[in-house]
Image 1 (cartoon, helix red, strand yellow):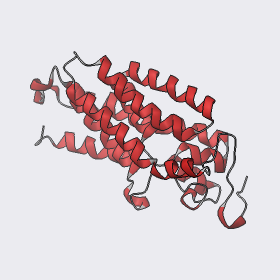
Image 2: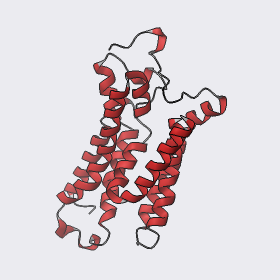
Image 3: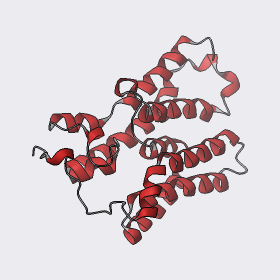
Length: 222
């Protein structure tokens, strides 16, 4: 694997795909740099608040897809004869490609390594590897968002739920690194939401339905 050029090319391609920020592109098309508006984050929530629901839905779909596609598809472009020992552990390669996309999503090189929080790209990766835990995490996220009207609470709890569900679902499936990756994503989800946690504690976190305009009182072009 370490000497296979195609593997490294696909790993780099996964990072580059993950680094494409639909929220940044959509914002620029409307004359807005989302890094300077709302929460300053290049994720779905900030895109929805600043640019509107259609933009938020577009970001959601694209961010999930850029985690799913590398994890699900890229492994099929490798030379199977070079990976006989991975016949029973093909998920390791899928996990590598998916996590590369998540890293690209969170740390895009052309945006000063300041991207999204990795929730949706991580969900896309695990949708290709462990769809059942993702569906459980989705139910928890939607339920908490409906109950509290805070996207951040739903996102953080969905990450933890994904880790717990993945552990339970794969405990006897000989996929230890899948469990490790799930917990890493859960901890990372909480870490990237640390400013949200501060706002929740201070009572300044925006709720679903509240819109955030452009900084400095400027208007967003419609």
